[in-house]
Amino acid sequence: MTAPGPGAAPPQPAADAAPSLGRKVGAAARWSLANTVVMRLGNFATGIILARWFLGPEAWGVYGLAQTVLLVLLSANELGVTLALVRWEGDPRRFAPTVLTLSTAASCALYAALFAAAPAVARVLGSPEASGVLRVMCVCVVLDGLSQVPAGILTREFAQGRRMAVDGVNFVLSTGVTLLLAVQGWGAMSFAWGAVAGNAAALAGCCLAAPGTLRFGWDRAQARALLRFGLPLAGASLLALGVVNVDTMVVGSTLDGLALGFYVLAFNMSGWPVRIVSEAARRVSFAGFSRLAETPAALADGFGRGLGLVMTGTVPLCVLLAALAAPLVELVYGARWLPAAAALPWLMALGLIRIGCELAYDCLVAVGRRRLLIGVQGLWLVLLVPVLVAGAGAGGIAGVAQGHVLVAGAVVVPVFLYALRRAGVAPGTVGRACARPALGGVVMAAAVTGLHRLLGDGVPALLATGAAGTLCYAVCVLPGLAHLRGTGRRAPAAPADDDGG
Image (cartoon, rainbow, N blue to C red; front, side, top):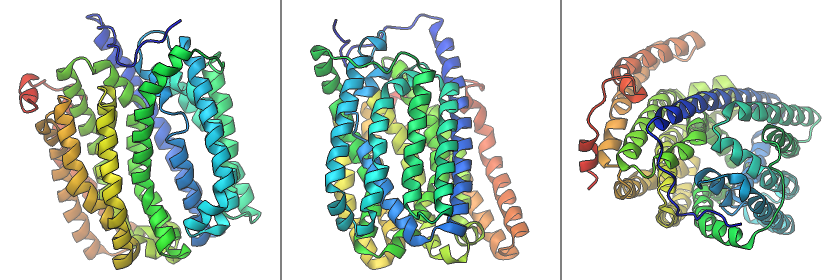
């Protein structure tokens, strides 16, 4: 039995397949958005409770470092092979046992290495006390490796309704354990055991939602093909996670634990709109782009619409959090967390850039530009480290956030635009997708800033300011929303591709 090749073209859809795919993607996107919003709101409420009453900045700093290490390991723990479950043609259950064996073996090896190196890693990152938290939290690497195949099957089938049920169980159990242990004084370790409990529940839920997928097997030919396909993606993902999380490492190693706690809180706040919109989109974007990869005009149109919708939904949230950073931090978390507000506006700008880059990443993976992505992410990381170190020395956590924005906006965005152009997505397509949200964001920022100075920081004043700013934004973006959703009059496809050569 042989696996389909990673470069094999998917079968051409029948004439009536596009509407069916569109319905699947649309339904999956709605479920995914609902799932992400519910989970993020729940995590938001949990974070407020923990930060206000149980955990101080030092505990948040330890948790932030452990979470950073975990995310880096998760970016490469399955060697990139599970994306074949979404991308390759044919029945994925034929090669799923080999995928599961590779994913589990790699995850166990990574965890064993982390367990041995945890004390040294914690010292290098400036928090020796994080060693035990690292060893417990990174058990999630093994649990995640086991769940990759059933989760991949759910993604391929656009089964986001079942995925929402799984994530709900994960959230309830992880949150319950974390709160229970935090109340009892476990500090940052409460996050670690909560994460393990939630991931164990997610593994069980994925197996129930996609029965028969937790089955080990081995086929040498399949393994070679999977590794050829997956290793470049794993390298790109590892670099991408390094880009997102190197700032935490820089703050931890160059500043103190208190500053790290403030930065982690600000970064988490900046992630509210990014994760709500971006995670919902990315759960269906790769599968959707993969179906369109063989039709450049359709791919360009789909990317433009997707980017426009994602930006339209994210910009107002980012503007509000950036323009009202200090009063919102004090209102939500309390006055002791006010230093976090210095970094928040810059991190919101970074969040907007990240959303566009993540969608571009999924598009480029779908069309097979894996080596190019490694180059882009490697360039980003190499430039970022010295800039962040210099920013930390010059401006503390605000300087780190400013360095992030400088590198992303001045270097990475132009490189991604070039890569997209080579894949058939013209810069004009990207510009048109972002034009109305950008205009609305500028108008909204001006309105919010002016009203805040006029009305002050009280809760009624902040509500009125936010509502008025959102109304200004809506006036700017609503005329283009019908086109983004595909319900307006379609423009001809050809001109969009001419720009891209």
